[in-house]
Length: 321
Ligand SMILES: [Mg+2]
Image (cartoon, rainbow, N blue to C red):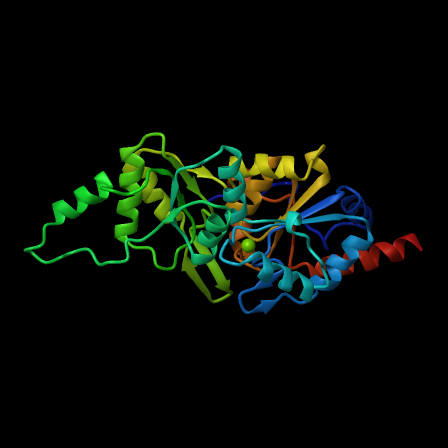
């Protein structure tokens, strides 16, 4: 298979001194993914704290856009604090918050069926939404059990509140029954919204371990209902609109988007018209990056990790002396 590379894709430490200087002055805002870029599941990535401080000292506006709605805002703040960054709530974007903002913005009053973590559901509850989940009971699988009756109950939602939105994000307890319930809500009421948070197919935990993400299950619901999810995580178009408005982006080319996943992060950067930098510190090894051939999911730049910014700045300061 022919290897295709974006001609503009450059390692930031393999650029000439002039290119390095031009690169650093080409953006005013740095928007960054979190997992795999600032920290891995096993701990912080070395050099991130110093690199972020240098970027801030250089006057770069920082914002953080994660697909991980499993972490509370308090946990995010603590992690940022450990990196020497006092990130404000409005500087952190993740699918649970975006979903809450979106549902409020359209005046949703009906119940929300959520396939997601308790953290995600708590954000919805705290915002005043009635949240349905489950079912927690096992589906009868004996020959005598009336499975048709159970499916009919799912479909007819006897006695339950009206469901105005089905929301699917990461759920470690996801089951066939919960997917069946979601399918029934979506099919029974064509005006029921279908919202997806994170769409990742694979979630890397560290360099040797990854887990199945919600992407495959969103596909199941899309294919079995013929509906398309409104994606409020990266690389969703709806999230792009939220981010461009929330951060008042006047010139997308002056934003550098940093992430470790090709479809989610680089795809999102393309969608927003941002410059893109892929960090090799998370879910994408260098050979996968170099073999990838979807131009919409390729970065303009790549780096081993945020620590490369330290060398870039030290080198640049040296030039200016
Ligand atoms: Mg990531």
